[in-house]
Image (cartoon, rainbow over all chains, first blue to last red; front, side, top):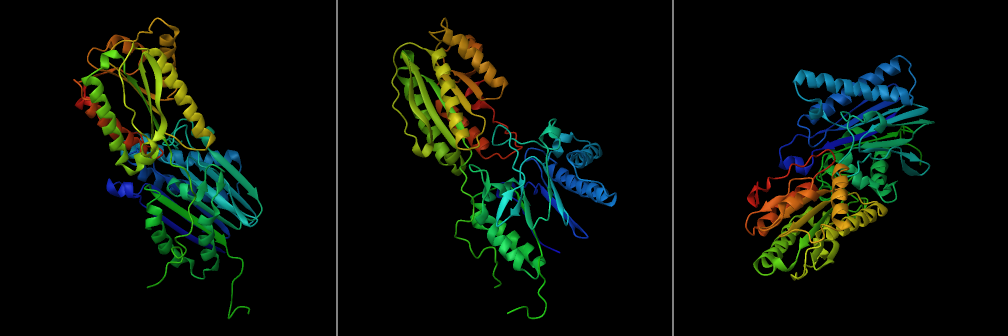
Length: 253
Length: 227
């Protein structure tokens, strides 16, 4: 049903300072519905890698329960999804006996069903999707006044900063990524998706008969010199495309 | 070897061309008559150290934009904002009185227009720095400039519009400086301009390396200031 490729690479700045990769992500397939959650731990928070992992797990668990209960996706339930991740961070901070701010991280999630999709975002990173022959940004990185500021799950203003987008109709392909990928994939001045970044990835992914094998190659690509020269932050990228046809036998000539 | 399909088209323009985020650094320098001689020579040398140091850091070189405003007899914009690549150090000359209030007010205006340029071009930026350096006291303390400078620095700091540092060289009126600086003014040890600028450069390199969520801890200025 879906061809998916994903990779998460630790940034060179984190390798220098022996910081763990602070990005986390996971995905789940439930029937024809694809769930993705991605989180980027704050560089300044000591346990943000744990925070990001907890936020991703809690988000997916909450959405799965919503799907089981047949709940609708609305801005209100979107807030509930984000709040479930926040709750997990507060639980974790008690377990670890640390200030919850030490777990600060962003959150991106997507619930892509056969005929509707729901995207949520708190902080930077973004979701993009195909629309006609091109790609559009579903959400845009939330930046503070300054380049090194954003809003996290642990921020007091999380509720007003969270963005939700519901789309009716089938989404053909979509991608989510953290801020380490964002400056390569988005053009800020025109506030648009930089399509040449995604085109080759989508072409390969659409044509692949064994997409599982592509993860390692995407990992290599995101670690390549050309990418490293442009970003020294952790980078996570998940790209999914609906399989439209399945070629059987020799195909059609 | 198996080919990586994602790497095959490398070499083509595959990444968005986004401008680097900028960190504006405004130096407001006292070049009044009393700076003549050794202080001015050391200050000049300090600025050169500052430029070289920023230049040697690949990120700071692209991200830190420096402007120099001097006050001595009059307020003069010696260098508009530019990255160190495009930045030429002016020859400083000492003369006249100390219109410090006017210099700060004009500096804040310059910074505002630079922020407008960033916004118009969709350029992300870090919290700007203002660095005021003097060896005396303002000769315009009884004009509207001084009160306006104090008021606007206070507002700007509380809104986090910039970070304002005031540094007094031997002979500076530290009490006056604390009227306009929210942060405790720093007293330069001797003529350690060089160490002061090394600190400034190191701090700005740390900021220009930071990514969202980073709180940048600055080194203590103990190497050059009496604290």
